[in-house]
Length: 432
Image (tube, rainbow, N blue to C red; front, top):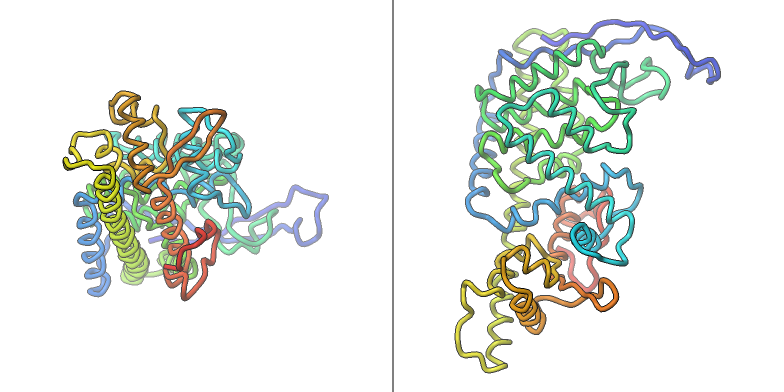
């Protein structure tokens, strides 16, 4: 089982306060290997894991809109990865910044550009992890490097002792001290070998992989971001979430106290017998499965809101077409239909974007965008001299409210305001 080992810290910084230049003994945790580790879930957790898996699989059945907006739900992760303090660029600004990656867009803030770039990096990096034959230590190191491109001092597996909490200068008062750096490579290799197997259910596997990664803490910075990406990687590789990214990590961030308590419980296996260790793992998996169920509930709510939007769009378009005397039904292979079908995934468009994405002429793209603008589905926004984009404000507002709910401890902003960094509420709409 996992165990604590004693080590000695020798201070090498003379120009510090007496408290910070202390030397002395501390305990660091050596986790048990995951490959071959026994696991027996208590009946309640076993049922909760089965419920979570059913709900995730049900969400994966054709909910294209959830897949379309899932990258926007990574915005909180992108904000953290960009190390933006106290600033949450709006969904509109981030969508315009994404557009600016392929076309010239003026008036986009630097913060929005950083977030959009990081969203792209996270999406591409996690996609690579899902598609490779087997995830290796090199893949994890490359993912970490892509998340911290401007901080080379943190790249690669750590070669120093790190810790969580306490002083910045020594681990003597730390809340938790991970294993010695000499053990990290072997522990990460064991973790990835475990992730390549299928002995446990996908939910339990994702839970254990995440907790083990956070316990190893293999990097000097950025462990949380990689650990959260690992959740999606495991679930996608096991076939639960092919296209969409479930907001499990955002729910765990909102359940912060229970999350940290669950991780601490997971580590109780140290100096405990095998039955106690299995009970600790079961307790942590219970927390993770509960977060997964809550994430599915919120995802279903988003899907329902987007379905309601589609109904409104159909009604607005039908009324606009009737008002101008159109008698034929909208053709399913028209540019207008193609834009509507993909609108949650591409809520900010230009004529060039539509032509490129949907393979239509610029003339057809322009006519379709104008038709949707006249129907009140899109609005025009200037993005430069003589240039403008078409924006689906309804989609961006839906994404914003979803993010705000996910940051509320009751997942309802009418009962509790967001307790962590979240985008500002869209004006003129009731609280959901």
